[in-house]
Length: 484
Image (cartoon, rainbow, N blue to C red; front, side, top):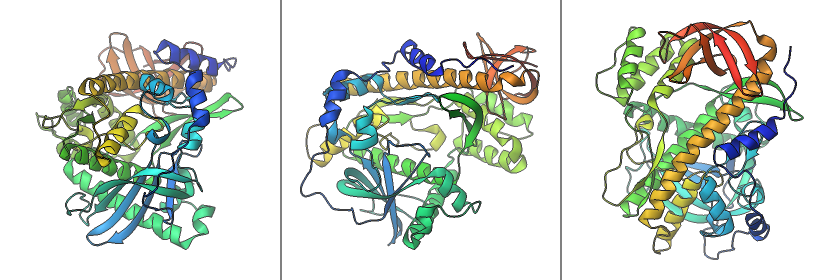
């Protein structure tokens, strides 16, 4: 029997409050947003004539990035335009103070809790189709070997006027690039746009191949997405990355590296995004041995990626389970303040020494901080943040990111409990995702739902693949219980 439909939106709001968020935009910030506009600045380069396009989720309106590419001496010249949010929400204003406290937009499935007033993030500073905007442009040249930064003067960052000519979606463009569907209407109507997207895809493949050689990890994971109709959850399904979403991921990683190198080279203190060397590397070694493979005793990103690639080739059907296990064992990323000349740990998962977050200022406060640091550098002005302020911002961004992950996880469980209520008693293939003092947790593959193992949990560890039966669901508490 189905659960009676619970008020998931109210639960999401309460979950936000319990995790330390303020789910309602303050009145002062809303009032500021009413009058907020990007200031018209004379003298900025006019790049509105380029065939910029955006790629994002089907329902996204807070568009942070647009892209354009051309063949150039030394490779493919890629431009990533990033929404200049700071120009409409200055440091110390009510909007900024709220964003600094929240630090992130929280996508709770049934409802989105924006970091910025929606009038700003989905309108005034969104790189919406057909709108002239001011953007921070990261320009990079992708060499034939996939490297960036090796050609003098090939990578630079500046501000410019831009206009998004085509707002496109991952689902439609990805299916076309993969040969699984016809061209989206906007793409079919423009031979120039078709060539533009193919060139961008070519550049993205070069970037990815170069990172693979450096040891960046190759994952294949499905994100749980609820199918909601009139505020009611009808089902849950896994949403996987496709060629279009990977294209944007590759460009954003490249842009973030260029940003981090630019700030470090200029001697500017900044916020870095790091993923430490995994503490549970010995368990990864055990996991590889379980599959008849080998990892060295010391953590090695290139060796781990090579193992992942071999697993994907050997068993693509179950590769998502291996990906999930490695992700859980790696642990989350974090933000840290970086001082000029000081050594900062890199991003283990991306095999990157210099990495920051800068490409989503409508959605993440760390990116807005980075944008302000970059703009001050370009204007030859003093840095807008002290070292202590950067330390505090980095700590809060890490804490709130973890809190947001918990809100999303708990709401995903509630939505999944609603969707799975009539499947109690069914058997599922599962992988163990957590062994904690609070219990053992598993994730089934279809749909990709996580729950607690209430029976037969003795002797299992993260990465073990087992068969489970769905014992019960409780949408009110977000409980999904399995038995081995």
